[in-house]
Image (cartoon, rainbow, N blue to C red; front, top):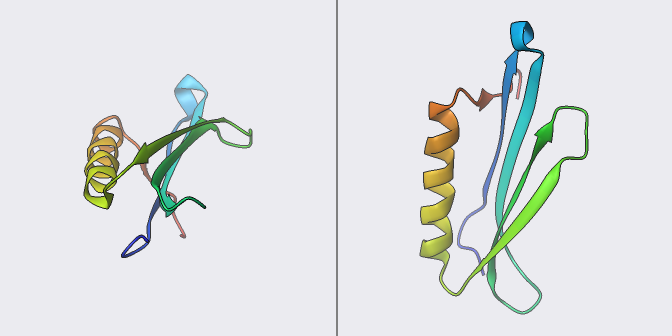
Length: 83
């Protein structure tokens, strides 16, 4: 069971480069009780790609969640305005 909800949706847009990307992450529990970090990314308006990481401990999933969030913020991803 996840002790608190972890989810984020961030975007990176640059009209000069025709760039409109999104990145979303969520930590949840699977039907088998494993902790799962699901990442989804792609072009805004598209379906994108997904990848799931399974962990035995929630702390490991939170560590990866925070590290990926820091990486994306350094690359220019920001929360969508108005959310």
